[in-house]
Amino acid sequence: MKTAAVIAEFNPFHNGHAYLARMARSLTGADFVIAVMSGDFVQRGEPAVLDKYTRTRMALLGGFDMVIELPVFGSCASAEHFAASAVSILDRMGCADYLCFGCETDDPALLERTADVLASEPEDYRKVLRSETAQGSSFPAARAQAVRAVLGPEAAEMLHHPNNILAAEYLKALRRRNSTIKAVPVRRTGSHHDSLTPDGHYMSAAAIRALLIGGSGAARQKLLSFIPPASYQVLENAMQSTACLQLSDFSALTAAQLLLQRGRLEDYCDISPEIANRIRNLLPQFTDAQSFLDLLKTKNYTRARLARCLLSVLLGRTKETQQRWKASGYLCTPQVLGFSREAGVLFGRMAPDFTYTASPLAADGKPADQMNPLSVRLFRQTILASELYRQTAQQKSGRVQPEILRRGIITI
Image (cartoon, rainbow, N blue to C red; front, side, top):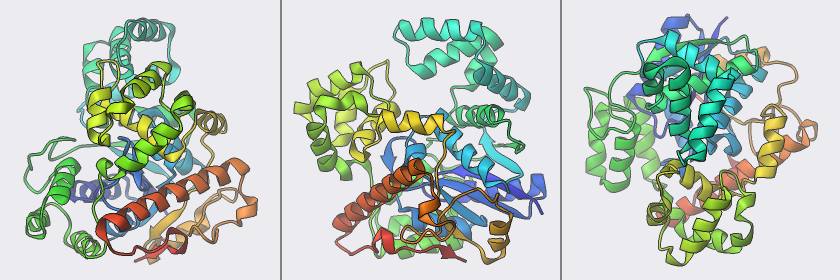
């Protein structure tokens, strides 16, 4: 019995994700394809457009056999921590044989060499990286220049594509853990990552989010061509009881937290002293979270980095906890959000010391008192983040949403 894994956000689930599930099964001959999925907040520093339970059900009906939540400290982190924490879950889980991921390069060997450099950080790489960051370059730009110095311009150009960056980080994480999981790159098809223009039956998640947030029910009908039918029906059902969320829906809460924490902003993940001072200086001009990011943005800091800064303060993601989490090897207790009945056999294949939970209220996988104290802390923070998401969706929609602590595992 073989199992292939995917790390994803499904924000929301669409034909491209269904294609990845099919390719993972086809390329590896796997009996099951599982996903480690971001919860209610995602790597770009924003809320997911739909809650994690809706996205889980869409994925299970769209070709995946199990969905495991990536806790909030990983889902809202930089590409490095995002990848390392998700790979840590799969490696400790013990039943994943392959990790499949999308990429935008026709040269997987170059991707492998790039990951080698990122994992080992040779001196010539680190020298250029230090020099570029000292001159004010953003980290992604500095890293690309450092890779260029070691491997040449093609490798540097490859890192301009978001999927390639994550692919390299997945490979780096596997190397650093000496994992036995085999990497299987899958050439991305259809629309580019942030393209707003459809390509055949493929539309980017960014374009779908824009249509969901700004469109009517009639406009959503256009998505029938870009989302598997069963998954689309889940989306339509969800729209009768909830609302699609975006960063601006958390504006008041974000402003309140920034005001309350303005004296200790440097304690939060991704916030440098320079960013902290910039936030403090511009805070009087805060009108909403989206426009505040426009005020904060400089050539040295990407919008995603700044969005993660605001989200760290909103969700209480401190550097102290992140450092302990990284030192532990990204130890956490994830929640299994859903699975197909056939995939139930995977629970028996999980490593004996792998702790997981099947519901927030009752740790069905392992008793809560057997969890590592750090895992308990991270788990509670994920639950609090999801409850904040639920409350915000409830207020926006005007319809009562099921309490997070009462949600159970989804079975298809």
